[in-house]
Every structure is written in C-alpha cells, then in structure tokens.
Image (tube, rainbow, N blue to C red; front, side):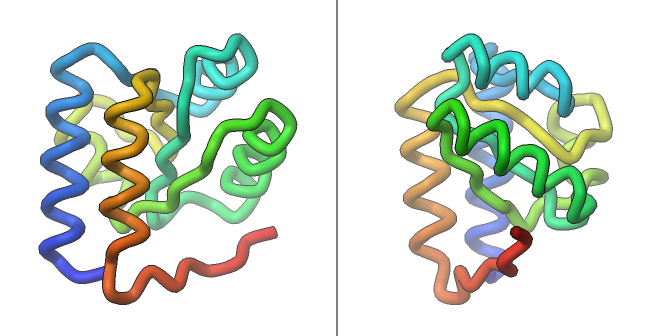
Length: 114
C-alpha cells in the first residue's frame, strides 16, 4: 500500500472519529460487532497475529468485514488518542469508504493470517 492510500485512510479515519462513528479497542469493537452496530473492523498493520485471528473469527461469526490497514497502532493513537490495534466503524458509508480505499490500493496483497 502506498503512502497516498495510507494518508487517505488516516484522513477518513480522522473524519470518522470526529463524527463519533468508531469504537476503539479489541473488546469494545468485538461487542459492537456482536450487537450489530459495527459495519467493519479496521486492524493496525502491526496487530498481533492472534488479535487479527480473533477479530476474523468474531467478524466471520457475525458478518462484519475485517480490513487490514497500513496504519500502525502508533498512527491510530495519533488520530483517536488511544493506542489500539482494532477500531470498529459503525457507519455503512464510512465502512464502504474504507473498503474502497484499501481494495483500490496498488498493492493490496494482505497477508493471510488465518
């Protein structure tokens, strides 16, 4: 993923947070998926394999999409004030925007962490 896509992802995340459409942290994000309020989950590029595996399990069970960003946990801390590897997006429009950005990246070959 190039730096332009990373910047656009960060910009969209910033807007999404300011709009109050995110849930930060693993447990809170998984709860949002379970109660149906989360449309997708964003994971940090440096999230542990175990975290990504558990997020994929919960999202697979409840039908939410998992999007692996190139933002690190430190990058996410800059935008949301909390260092976290997992952010739930609770708005369909924002979720679609993240999906378009990440899937349109020239190198969107994400590692298979199953």
